[in-house]
Length: 293
Image 1 (cartoon, rainbow, N blue to C red):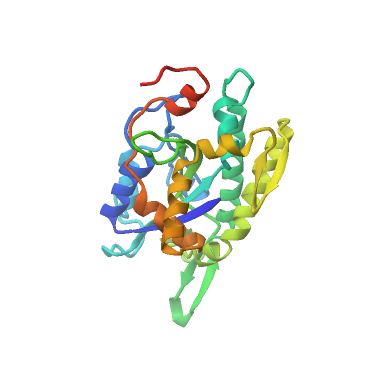
Image 2 (image 1 turned 135 degrees about the horizontal axis):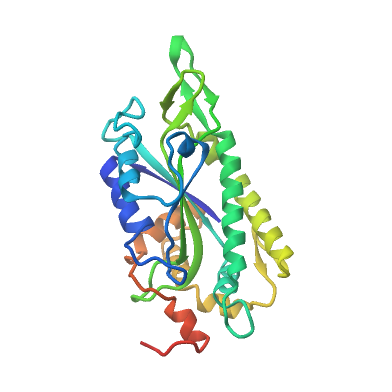
């Protein structure tokens, strides 16, 4: 699944980053979150590479060029769109394969690599289609720029339920609202209307890439609605680690909501704050690898 969240205002964008995307300094191979990494042709133009630092991210939120300290794009209004968070979610069975993929309950790190590669390939396709508005000399159209600045943050858990998170592999591809217009030789705001309109296509392309890579690793692939699931991981196990989904579906049923976008809003309204657990406790306990806390 792919969700897209637009954030307006520098303060809101910084809060979104610190509270939802990069929550703390408890990173590592076995952590729920990993260090962010810069991607995109736009990032390369600004000499941003490797790990994402809060300092550089916050400068971009303030519309500041991290190289020069000067203004990046023309508009600095308080209500401007600062970033768009494109979140790519792995099917739950894929998450469980990552966390306990072998018969002994040891995780399969190849799944994470497949997820990252599928995300980066999908984002490269999105980047190639990015546009900016053209309003110079009476023009009123959009021009393709083909470059973005985006930060990749891998998360391996969902929002907690009763203080304990379920495993849920997803990647935040956070796109800053700046793209370089080569025709005008300046940085301008991104026009994402067509990307949002074609979200269903990009979601299908992401699923196809991920399913293909996992199939090449030896996993059986079964169609599951508009997505897929891995063969050999039964639905009961998936549901056991899907408490957030159960909460959202129950609330949607109570309110008579069946639209996916509205369900996403319910998800944001019902979520708990993320904790800073270093390990995925429920997975480990379920596999007999850790004592109950």
